[in-house]
Amino acid sequence: MRLDKWLWCARFYKTRSLAVQEIGKGRVTVNGQATKAARELRAGDTVALRQGQVPRTVVVRALSSFRGPAPVAQQLYEETPQSIAARAQAAEARRLAPEPAASLREGRPTKRDRRTIDEMRHGWGDRWSASVDDGPEGDP
Image (cartoon, rainbow, N blue to C red):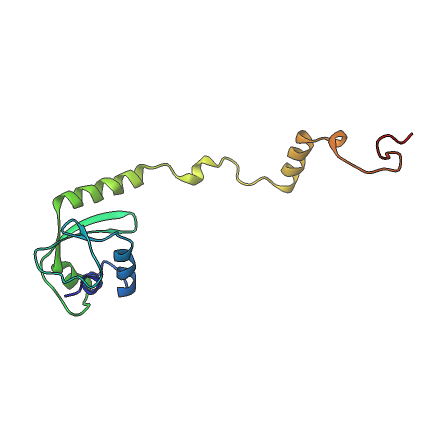
């Protein structure tokens, strides 16, 4: 069975074309080697892949020629204990990571705040203006 079709049947990717793209980018390896989408897959092969930011390593248990429901698809593979531990550790790290929005204290400045900031930064004397009194240098 083709690797891209098995990844689609096992519900790792939503479409076969997404599976082909990930394989083409080198994000899927079989038995530690980069492969092509048309590679023949057999029971017992080890497949390492990434779903988004989550790396997974699975052992192929069975092959299926059609995409079935999720409980059936989960019987096609067995995830390695190291992969399960790494996934749990990554999920915990994401959970404990600081919220990016927490660094914002007051949000965006209002129009009034922007004017105050501009006044403190420049002031009226720093503005450039052209007037009749100012001529080119060297003119009396």
